[in-house]
Length: 245
Image: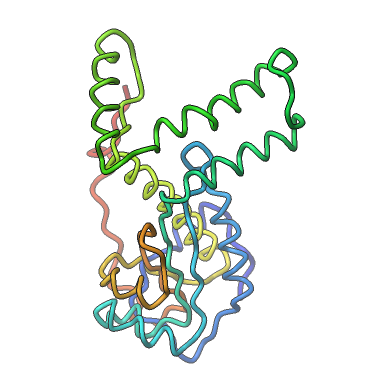
């Protein structure tokens, strides 16, 4: 194992590795450390609507591989991480943020004694978050969408309030964590491959995930072989995607 890479080195080293060396093992404690760094990723409203399922059991990996359509990246993986979006846990996460505010500012402070920062935090997690995430069969989301669209005629306003919008928000958050994880793994000299091609329903059943959980992606982990990277990296010319305003 070489020295831990810098951020720039890790980003350049990271590739989607399709074939791992089955004779080279990786340390699950290091993978867990990289998942702890994944949990430090920026995320919407600090709601942290994610869960990370670290699969180290060879039997479980063998069961999941067919659900990933027997991709080499799954079949040869030493370990897997299933990144799961948990929009359904929004109430629990909002309460956790309010408890953190209690810890920092004290609980049950009279409103006239609260600092502006405390008032903003309590209002945000006590009122704004329930407004954004609360829904019933998509009906409330539609009503909220109509309301903010009307208000938006007169002033700037947050418009992503439908059930489908909040689902996207939760998945973006989970994707940020997955990227943190893969860069952290690269820094350790470990390889990964994010796999969206999978039968997520079967994986959910195998892991016993609740109805509200949604698989964001499955990331395989290991050490690359010489044939593990399928060719040179291709990117669209940067000047086609970079726009300075």
